[in-house]
Length: 155
Image: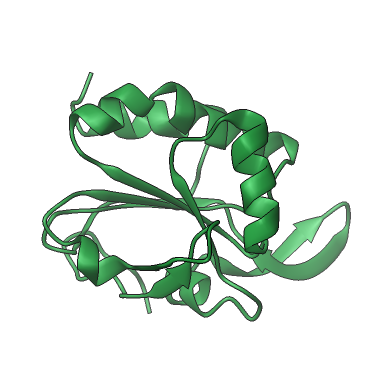
């Protein structure tokens, strides 16, 4: 299966940092950025989250919802949000990561010569109708929010 711009994004329901359930289909009518990332409070993931935080005014201006998804539990998300003053929700997709799998964002990874199953750093922009508008399979963590803003012509 290959995800394609213009096709319907897989629906999901996941808990946020407060344990509240977030259902993608309930967000129809607005753009949604979904970014998958490996782990809270690691160098690359922190850079990516802080780039979204630093560009938050643009996302708010255009009423774009930002959702970060990792397999970290809610209490870890809460600490990460507080530590870096993140203004958006972080969702938990526990192993075997069914949501990340449906977005082709979970699979075999290599790190320091070892292979393991994990979340891939990938980002998706979902349009107001619930379809893929932009897909980023290769992400530069430190500038992902900047890239989305530019690609959507929001600057």
